[in-house]
Image 1 (spheres, rainbow, N blue to C red):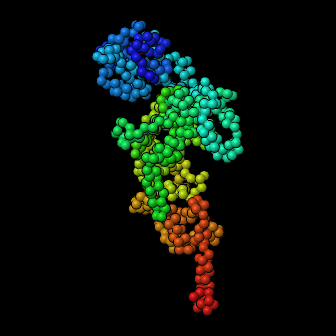
Image 2: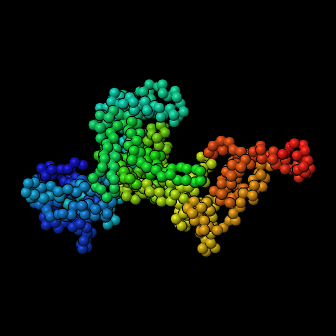
Image 3: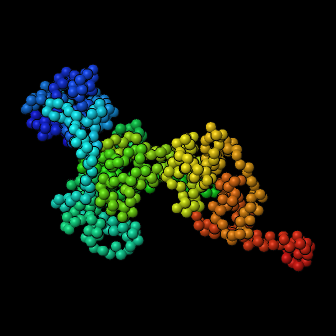
Length: 585
C-alpha cells in the first residue's frame, strides 16, 4: 500500500473506502477490551477494528480525525513515540502485520497529528477473530459474522493468478533467450531433444503459457521481457541483501533481480555463492566439503517462493544473506491446508498452479511444488540446525537457514552410511529427521515403526531396560566424534578374525559390494571399521576392486588366490618339494 495523505483521507467514505475514523484526541482509544464487560463495547478498540477490517479485505484505521464527513483533523497523542511498539503488539496479539505511520496537517510545525494503521486483507479461506469472535463492521458497530458468511469464507479456494491473462501483453513482449532456456530445460527433463526444434509459439501454447494470442501471468513471470515485467509486475522481483553481521540494520550490498525467472535464477545463485564458504570434512583419506549454503537447498527455497508467493500483493521476495545465516521472506502465507506442523507431510495445492506446473515440467521444482523435504534432508544431513519456518504468519512465509555446522560427526555418519548405496536405498527425509532426534536424545519423538526400521538397518541401537529404554546412534557415529568411550556394546574384531568370514562369502559369490561386507560383519564391527578393513585388504593385495562410488565391486585378487593355492600344496607335500619343482623360491 502507498501512504495516504490527509487530503485523501478527508474525502474518504468509510464503507466504500474501507476506513474507520476515530478522534482519540488524548490518545485514549482502547487497545483491547480493557475493563469493559459488555462484549459489544469491548470490541470497540484497536484490535477489534484491525480484526474486522482485515476480514473485510483490508483497510485503514485512522486516529485523530472526526467521523463526520468531510473528516476534520483534531489531532491525536495515540501511541506517540511508540509506533513500533504498537505494530509489534498488534502482530503479537492478532498475527496481522499492520503498517503504521504518522501524518501532520501542518507538517512544518508538526501540528494536527494523525495516526494511520494500514491493515492488510485476510488470506483466502482465512478468518481472524477478536476474543474468539470473527468480526465485521455494521454501521457504527462491530458485529459477529453470521454462520453462513463464515462458512462461505472457509470454503474459499485461491484463484490461480498465474493462469490469468495479462491484458495488453503480447507474444512480442516475451524474451527469446528466456524461452530458449525454458525449452532446453524441458528437453532435458523430458528426455526429448526434439522439443528444442519446435516453434516458440507452439511450446508456449503446449505449456498453456499462452492462450491463442493472449499471454498469461505465468508467461510474463517466467519468460517476459525485463522492462515489461518490471512495469506490469514489479513485485515479481527478487531482492538480495548482504549484511556482514545480523546486528547491522543497513545492508552492505543490495541487488534487485527483475529478469524473467529462467534468466534470473542462475544469476541469483551466482551472486549468493560469491559470498559462500565451505568446511572440509575428513574421514581418513576420504575428504568431502560442506558448503555454508547448500546450492540445492537455496535453489529449492527460492523456487518455492516463486511458485507459491501471492503476486497480488505488492511486495517482492526478499533474501537476507549473512556470513552464517540466510533469511528468505516471501509474501503470502502457506498455501491453503499447509501449516508448519504438516509442512512435510501434506500434498499442498500450489497458489500458482500453472506456474508451478511449468517449473515441474522443466525440472525446476518437485511435482508437488514443494520440495521442502529436500531443504530439511540436506540441511540436517550437513549437521546444521533444522530449517526454521517459525517466523511465518498468514501473510508471509519466512525461512531461516543456519550455515553453522554444529555436528561434523553426524554429517560424516550419514555420509558414510549412504555413500555406497543406490539412490533408491538412501535415507528419506523422515529417517534423517528421526536420526537427528535420536542424536539429540529425543528418541521419544520417533514412532515405533521408524525406530524398528532404523534398528534393522543397523543405524541405531536400543539401550536400557524395559521401563528405561532409549536409543542411540550406532557405534560409527561415536567414533567420528571421538566418543568411543560412550559406546561399549560390541566386541571389536581385527582383520585376522574378519578375513575368514569375508572369504566364506567369496566361496559362494564371485564378487561383493561394501554393503555385503557390512551385512556379514555388522554384528561384530561398526561400518567404519568394516570399510577400514576392506581398504586394508585391498592395499595388501588380498582383494581387488573395480568401479567407483556405489558401483564399486570387490573380488579376491588373483595373486591372493595363487598364494593360497601354493600354501595348500605346501601343507600336503611340503615346502622343500615345492622348491624342487620351482613353484616357490
